[in-house]
Length: 430
Image (tube, rainbow, N blue to C red; front, side, top):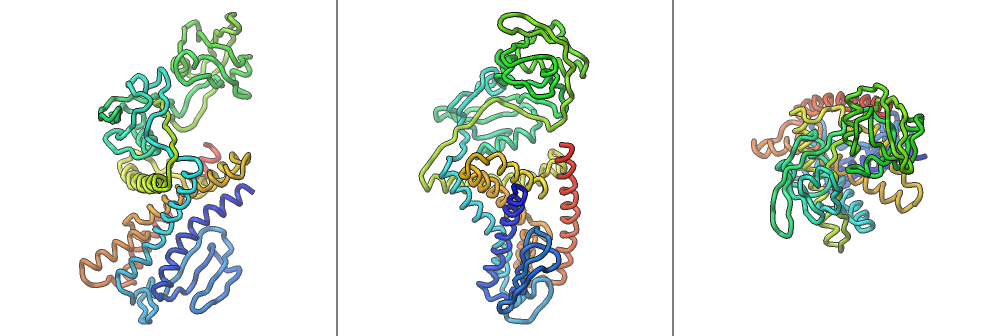
């Protein structure tokens, strides 16, 4: 049921995108030949006026087919026969519909639960943020020279920098200043004992809060409340020292000395190799605030702008190799993520709805923003073509535009197939 809901939710964003094209085309009296839900062979269709409304077999996406879109047509209702500003409006309507949808969803979510800010609410003692001198109440404004508008910006820049020391700009008591933060890097491949500590840093990070099932710690008899004090006779004072020693041991058995009710005990554990994505931690948390309608609207617009800016950054990071294609999330993992959000929110219908709206807003921004990129076959590429036509003072023939779009479409299809295969691999082998 969760997967079905996730597929429907993902499709909703695509359908709204196509609905934007459809409504604006109709507004300018352009003949819409077909408006189809989903892809593949037709299951059902009905014709109203010049438009055939159809339902197709493969439950993925939607499309709108307008007269004169890909070839010349002399009719009054032909897309190719309309003024360039009208064509631009029809093309831009899809991405703009997605952004409008995201704006509505975000306003609902931010009104219900508040919005994240760049104001620091917590700095964990002993963390990189603490060592860098950051304090609760500071507002982060830049990270590695890039403007920070929302917590997601900070997280994106933190991940892309791969744990390198970064200059962080803050505002404290109205005064701007900078400091250098060196994040903690937890490798993607790491040896673990299998426990959750009471704290991420400092003395409490050696105290066990809970034990992971079927882990070395569980097999060795460790319990909640035990404090790890030595590994192979070497004193450890925090979780970072435990991780460093386990990394050096490369999976060899380790004698673990620990305190239980004031008594020192010892057990031998063989660390387990865990594979995943690297984790970069600074050790701070941000304040969530609530506001009136104008503040919520402003925060929602800022969120949209920031997310679209990160789409542009991501393209640059892909070109420079700072981000690999395997890190991109395709439709399979998007649906899986939506499904997981629904499953994790089953305790409350309100929570399910708000979490769904939140993630759908993000996907909607991603779809709208990506489509505005000036790449062939995307709406942004077609808008670029119109811009070139304005500069040349003559329209580019639809058949030539179609050839360029076809080349871009082939590339996007190859990229799409790659991302789907990558999604499957990541979900299976994680």
